[in-house]
Length: 449
Ligand code: NDP
Image (cartoon, rainbow, N blue to C red; front, top):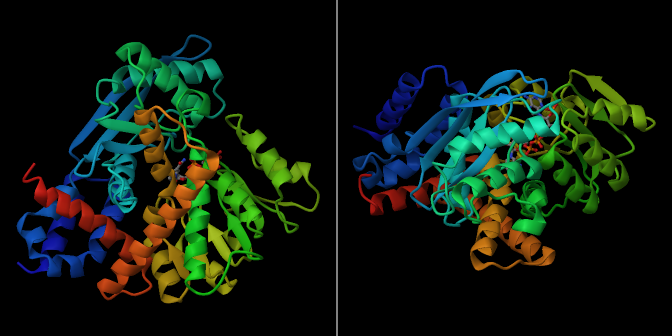
């Protein structure tokens, strides 16, 4: 069987075995399509059916999460943990609370996580979890009861050397705290079983900032390779949560002009630029579950609110999609290209649709894929695990320096892998290949398991 046929068969099998899981199909297709030259050069991967194995999660856990709201009404949410691949270390990946969460969404995120974690070169397997629970407009006691119920089941399946969850959409330090508290109570142990903890009880400095800062460091590396710099660039950022806020913060610090943020209801356009003071307002606003970005336009003069719109219609040099998957369509990318956007750096996971990625790459723009560009979050989570194991705490400067080095190293790996396999400048292929090869080699070493 030739390599093309092998890849085609694996993809067909994924579609057949996982009906309706469109995002998972999309994520697998994107990776597999770029692996042809690797599979051709490494027949032992085909022989050992590495692809057939890597697309199948090692374990999928689905569970009932009953909880009571403040009026005493009983609700039932669904919990998921996909333990996808442990060839490089304990499963590692965030937990997402959002009504759109399904098994397919968690599988796509878990699959991406395998290669992202591999790119960090740290000892991390890939996993992801979540629930269709919607934290928006819930009281703090409701969120606490939900987190406790979620962890009451999840605690059986995780552990500091088994599976180490973190935050994602709808899960920040507060939710991690509630889950950690319940884990500790049930297991009677204080270990680094979750990352993204608050700094005063085991968290790492720079962890909240890491994904956003890391994405900007990655963009800097892409620009540096072209003898360019982020300073003075007009940037649009989508989302207004953890990743978007810290992306904007680092961009502002480095002298870029950030003119937009958004949420699921709309986007704001601030032609004067968002400064650190205005950003503090957004951070405050979003610290309450359900705070709306519309209020930014009401608070500051000269700001336009684009109801129901994403920020891609706004003219910019660089775009940082930092909200959710598939938020840049081909049509959006066409508008962005026409408006002169020359760099897309993915802070969110898989925010750009395949057609839009192809357009960005073929038009000669710079494209930083999420596996590489947003790996700063999980990398600092790994640093948090190290600090927890050693029972010590590194300074802000130390962690930030390590993060910068990691993002540089990831960029180099992507560039070199793309070059080695004849796809120079294509960091999507570079990230997939560099991430995959490390996992595939470990799987070969560990036998058919
Ligand atoms: P947050 O919950 O802090 O913020 C999410 C933001 O995205 C909010 O502004 C939210 O708006 C918006 N959003 C969520 N869903 C949608 C949707 N369906 N349509 C439009 N807007 C939406 O999450 P994070 O910032 O942590 O995560 C953002 C992205 O970054 C995700 O793709 C996540 O997987 C990825 N990521 C996060 C990491 C982390 O360390 N936190 C690490 C690596 C990747 P609203 O308030 O209206 O819901």
